[in-house]
Image (cartoon, rainbow, N blue to C red; front, side, top):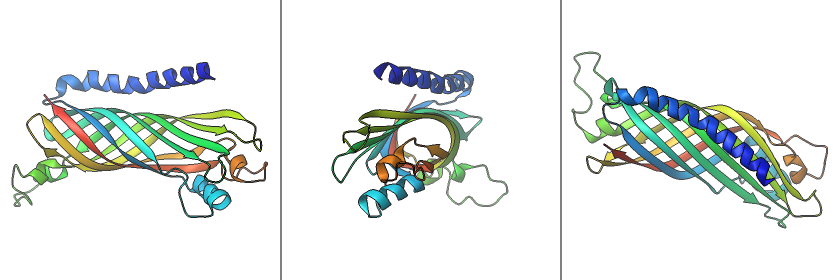
Length: 246
């Protein structure tokens, strides 16, 4: 099991890294002021079918399947052309776990490794299309700091079930998915010094539908049921980015 997991991990990591390396190699020479960034924060997973099975069959309450999720991301911001536009290739990692709240029969894990390239736009700093007076004066912290972005990406996701009860086949079963996603986000960059900035942000990723093999077996007594296995997945992150410029 360890050997198989390692093969999946390194294969997925190598594929996801290619996008980052290619973008840095192509766009790096065009950057006028590069910035390395580290992001971390709280992740919320919204998976309607998985949540419905967990709420209906296990807890009887309106609680999501995964509540304690954390995410980490390493990126490089590469301005190009005008200062209000930049490309931001990134590598990310996120993980969430959920134990059985009833009698410790199982433990579930969602783990995701991702690579993306965001096009970031500082909306309030866009060139004026007319001779109108700008909403904010040049150099204003909100004008220079507020940014939105759109990012296509790809992720390798592992969905894992570990059972400890005699009611289920004991052991560990993993399902892997390599899927594209689309991300949208917004943040406010706050310059602390010429070199260091902090950016509180929010972002949302849409993954489409993921199939979690045998999840229904844990959530219902009907072993033939598979109504909770497939679910659309929407992942939101609320966090903080620290940027180092040079």
